[in-house]
Image (cartoon, rainbow, N blue to C red; front, side):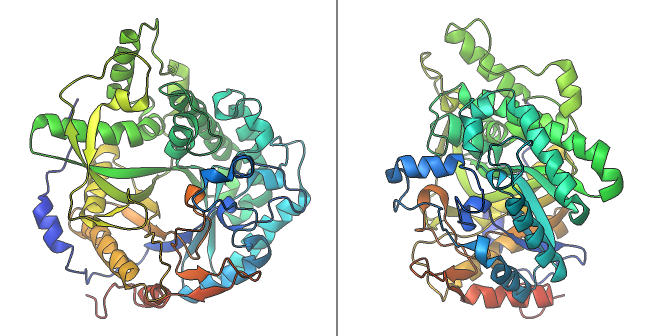
Length: 492
């Protein structure tokens, strides 16, 4: 495997983390915030909306969620969307990345049963954004599959490819004249690995070493079909662009040994390249193909557990992204494993076969996996740009905590250090990064973390029927960033 790590000294990057950049964001650099339908809208069964897999997942077993809560009401943004748009405008942001609830506009999941009330909600939201000078950036899918589609197998059933394409086409028809940037699917790794490998996320399917790859195979083909429909039927008139968001952790080699460097890169490629390589290069990464084939043979299988793209599918999928859309939160260290796991029951972890760990002095934010490592963000941006040679748009980044303090200086420091790393990648490393998205404008329902995790510029009082929004100190700080296009008081 060809190593493409950029060997920038971690010590150098760590020393620069305390030096907040005084460079201005480029004039055409876009800055916005993001949210997702299930996490903020509420109104889970109002106005004709159908049930989705997270409705079923939380209702069936509340113990799956840290505080046994659901997204039934969440932030009540279905009724308070105008207030949310006003908050986005008050901070001075350029765009709002939100997701469309598939079940809200198609209660059965199929395009022959359109819920007009749901359509009108998104039309009204988009109009409110446009009227306030904020560009809407909708995602077609952010994890909330209509439950009727899960009952036929969800992302494991190949018919989902055409069903998703029909849904995408309807959205282009309904909303596309007002949209310049579309996202097809948000974070396929979470959809497939968390949903169909270990079952920690909805729909809760446990299928180690099998479900994750079948899900990825169908999901990538669904994305590609949605891309081609837009490219051929709608782009000539609507003039927008489209991509799929993929999330990435930076994996830093635990030593300078070739084995550790290769292991760290293998981690990145299995967890990011599994989804990015097909849409940018046309096929699964070779190391993924080789390792799963080897493991499958050792398990006594006649063929690989990894579905194979036909030559025609490879051609169809290659190039189905106008830019690389990246979500990033944290970094881990990686060492090579000295032994190959015993052959037996398959798993995604055995297929990768690396050892992940964290440095003791890394600060932890919110959940234990969330380490604050700004230099890892820079290294990731450089690696991705060298590997894929395309524009990068950061579609999600942010800080979680469990105390919800209003004087959130730690969040301001996080923004300063992570955005310093981003500006260093642009100005010092020549990476073509064109946008940044903070998660989120308001506290929300954070999946299995429920309401315990606070990530908003604005706090939400979830004990109030009004779901009152109150600005944190970080909201004031970021409002000034948007005015000055600068992280510090004086920029060059």
